Image (cartoon, rainbow, N blue to C red):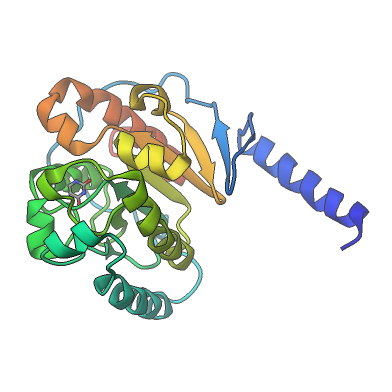
Length: 259
Ligand code: URA
């Protein structure tokens, strides 16, 4: 490609990012992560409603471009590979099964957690324990359901005793995560907690400083917030999470009741 044409494409890309509110581009190897320092001013704090009787808005489809069944098929093939993975000797030896991910293979929105716990290891489904039930209520408070979004983790195996994933383990699983994201092609990722945020974005700032604004990962807008397990221990952290969800819904064009 001629240098002039490549420059024009780059210029257009930068102008479009600027229109989307991107103010910083940070070059990281091997990926580019762009911080968007545009916490929407005036987002009101309120406690996340726990009722689940909200209806999904019908004016913003949660299904994007390509076909659902193609993507499900590709995820199924990848899931078979992941199920046989032995890259981490300890995890492969101690897991009951791998926990690949669940939800809409064509979702606009992905929730990214840390690693399966005991309940997830038993059932093979992410976020089904107490923290998972809280995540379900958060999703429903956003007028969505678990079937609208896709839920996955940095690690596909439970670390013994629920210890934090080791960097080497996260490195082994990264190819699977990136392949899942490449198939699903979401527009938005919510990182649940510091482990997800730090691993995905290769940053190490406290989660309290990372939340409330968007980053870009491979063209996907990323919002970081507190992990539901942390909310169970610290209910005072619920209002900021709800604030983050309101910001996310507003960026996704999804109306919340009473807003
Ligand atoms: N916590 C996580 O981070 N992921 C799960 O799947 C369950 C609990």
